[in-house]
Image 1 (spheres, helix red, strand yellow):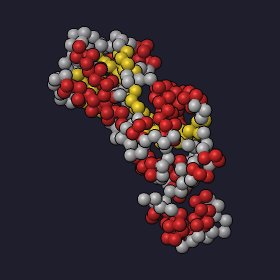
Image 2 (tube, one colour):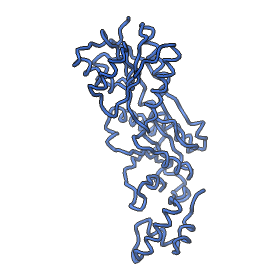
Image 3 (cartoon, one colour):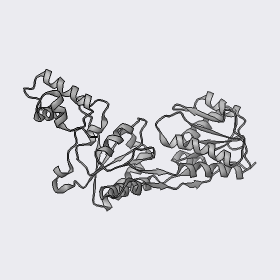
Image 4 (cartoon, helix red, strand yellow):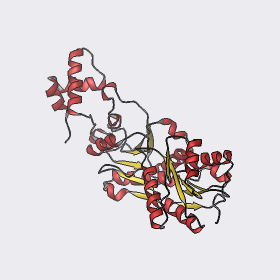
Length: 333
């Protein structure tokens, strides 16, 4: 149930105008005591100020907001291609794209939805983040803001998503390795709580091994926090695996370097696969699954425009199929 400004004013013992001025930073001659009362009431009631869409000129802005938790993400090859797809689709549909970078006001610490509720846009696109954004997404859904999340499906009701088919990618890699004669297959992934794709890839690996009726190797799923260390490489080698399915190309390329340093050859001693088809993997000959990042961006915009036009979140969810890029890092046994 939404809390309104009247409830905040009543609890704080002030007028609605005073509440509004405190939240907008227009405090003038408001005493510090009254300001503290307002902020306590806001916190106690969990109030989020949201501007009505009716206040927008002509009822719409023709702007799609892109919410980035970390602006540096936009510099990666991965996100730049998604962004290119977003811009392409926005242009074709006569929309502008707004990158939301503004920080939340001091009274809204740990309530990041605040900066997204001022109706500067008709809807919001979310990039995946290491942060847990579930509270923000719930707040946006509660206030009827059209939202599409890229690269995650574990979203609240009312939020649409666009996501690669991680299960198809992992299943295809395991199937390729099995067809190549491999029966001892391990998995290298990140130890992350909030990144949906790596959790799904791990789950898909377990399912694929079971479907292929292969043995589960003792210690055959190895997780690393950020980078692959020599200890991680040694763990994988100790499993006796002849092939390793890596959660992405970055992990695969790091592991490849470490295996080289250990005197092990790819693919003669160990076969490697990745996901993403990043440029270094192309040059080195890594077998990988590719998702069209640009297509993710295009579908995200199309899904968001459909949400803005009134379609349900369930009708606006899309899955992007992978493509196998078979190279020289897998050998036939």
